[in-house]
Image (cartoon, rainbow, N blue to C red; front, side, top):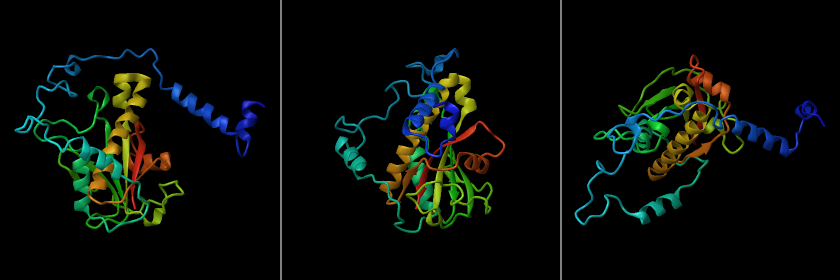
Length: 252
């Protein structure tokens, strides 16, 4: 059977999808793009990234790190669940608190609580709001510097049912969708083809932080990849084609 015939099939065999996925993966492999290594990202330089432990927070009086230890982390990770039904009405205050806990840089050091290849930090967050107390319906970009959600285009075009493509969530009952978009211009300039993979990794780290912070605050949430890419791009960044929606977290 030819490739053209297989493309025309109503239900292509599963192996077709596997081969398509492999091709997609190989498109982001190493090419001839020269990867830079600026001095500011090398260990001990004192700039960018997280060079070493020299400026880490001091330990407690007993010499132990200032956190609850591995047992606390185990409880947190074990308790996290994808929750697809609403547990209560979400407020703007609770949402911004969760975003700040998960993603905001440390005000003293400027360090983000998640890694980014080459210190790019080129994945941004927008809240597509449908029913959140204290926030107008529409698209609200989150500013990590101020910790605020600012309205950009609070209009009826930001409809969640038209954005999601999933059978495990009822879009009409969703309070908001947190969309992560990667700036491929930034990642591509530094890493070429490989930059796409690094953008996905950064979004994944952010998504994990988000789900843990939301869980701690008792906010139901469910990570999703089922959204319409083109519609999300037009909604979030209509004039910037290199800003790509890559990850969503639904707040039922």
